[in-house]
Structures are given as C-alpha cells and as structure tokens.
Image (cartoon, rainbow, N blue to C red; front, side, top):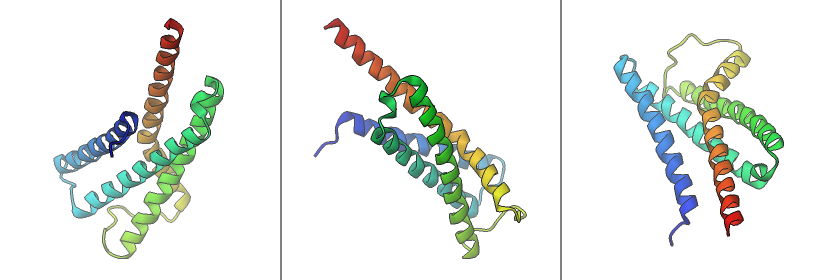
Length: 156
C-alpha cells in the first residue's frame, strides 16, 4: 500500500531534515576534535527529542486546525505550542542524558550544574534553534499551499 504524496513528503522531509542536522553536528564534532561515542549518543538523543516533539507539534496543529484559523490566532497558538515543544524536548533530552550518565553509557563533558532550572532553560533555547525554524517552515509551507488552492478555486 502506497502512502499519499503529502504524507510521504512529510516523512521524507522529517527524516531528511533531522538527518542533515545530525550529520552537521557530527561533522562539526569531528572537525573540532570533540567527536566521541558520548557525543554521538547525545546527538542521537537530541535528534530523537526534536523528531518526536515536532511530530507531536504537527499532530496538534492538525487536530486543533490552527492553520485554518485567521493568521493572528493561528500564529499565536503556533508560537505558544512551539515554546511548549521546546521545553518538552529539553526535558526529554535532560532526562535521557541523566539516565545514560547515571548508567555510565555516556560521560558528561561539563561540570554538572546543581540548578536543573538553569540547564532546562539553556537546553530549551538550544532546542528552539531547531524547532522554531521547523515551525516557521511548516506554517508558511501550508499557508502558501492553502493560498494556491484558493487561487485555483477562484480561477475555475
């Protein structure tokens, strides 16, 4: 059974996009001599969290029909949901990394900060560097597609 083109395109873009991000991370780690097994695992955890959260962000966008709302309302909800997604992704990364550090699978390359809140805020900002552009691309892609459909309907 073949997936519809739009669903196939979504999954292709998700896998290809996050794959490129992970390759860039690994290339930079290799270039600057900080590539280790721990670093690769941390990149994997980061990409997993981003992939998971952006997928659920997409499901929320579709479930609550934010793309069909007027731009002011739709963008407001999208901004709110993107912020929540960044915090959730940061929590996922922090929890998985702590578990892996505790089990001895990865080793921290930093001095642990006793303030979890500071780490969560910093990690949320790090997540936002990738999730915010994802949200913008997703929103404007669908905004343009909807406008094209309306133009086609108006011409027929």
